[in-house]
Every structure is written in structure tokens, then in C-alpha cells.
Length: 153
Image (cartoon, rainbow, N blue to C red; front, side, top):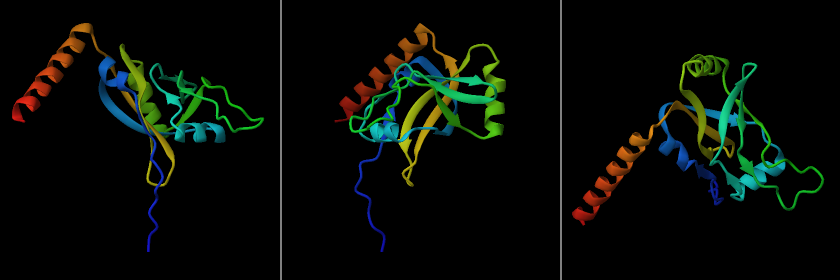
């Protein structure tokens, strides 16, 4: 008989990603993290608002994701804004590299979550930045959808 896991699952969204970018492609990546970082993420002390990804020497890195220091850690304390390596397949990295060289494409985090095995994964997206009028159109569509929901009730 299987034992149910009563732990709260990690699921952190980057709300700015959908607002600032047209998401064309999504990838699932692992991350190289230290123990204190994992514990801090599970406590919910993470901020992905200004985070973005870069390609360096055939590897993908995540920059500007703030993971607070774990309070109960002893001597091995991590930097909150350190550069973190993302774990992707070589084929995925080559596809990303080809697209990133195209003008206007960027790589950004969408969601940080814990899979069913308890491993932290990062969903990253590739796309182009939205213009101001695109953002206004999205806000209008959300308002219309909200009004439609209200009128149904």
C-alpha cells in the first residue's frame, strides 16, 4: 500500500514572464543547487521577478533569481543572487543557441516546481519581448473575459 505524501509541493510562478514576453517554446530544466538553497526554496523564500537565462560556453545559466539564505544553516551559506547552472540536453541547448542568435529572442524562467519524485525543476521559456500595445491588448482581453464570467453568474 502506497503512503501518501502530505508535504506541501513547491510551485513558484514568474508572473512577469507572461506579461512581458510572447512564449514560443518551453523547456524543463534541472538546476544545480546547494542544500541550503533547496531548503529555502521549499520554505517559499524565492523570487524570480527579475531572473533571466544566458548561454555561456555551451551551457545555460540562470541569473538574478533571489533565493534567501536558509536561517538554520551553519557555515556553508550560499549567496542569494549567485549564478546557477541549468541542466539541459545538448540537443536542447543547440536549438536554444540557434534561436537566441536570432534578433529579439530571449530565455527566461516561467515556473519553479517540484516534480512527483521531489526534485526541483525549472520551466524556462523562449520568446520575444512584447511591445506596449501588445500588453494593453492582453489586459483588454483579460477584462473582457472577467466581465463574461461575471455575467454568467
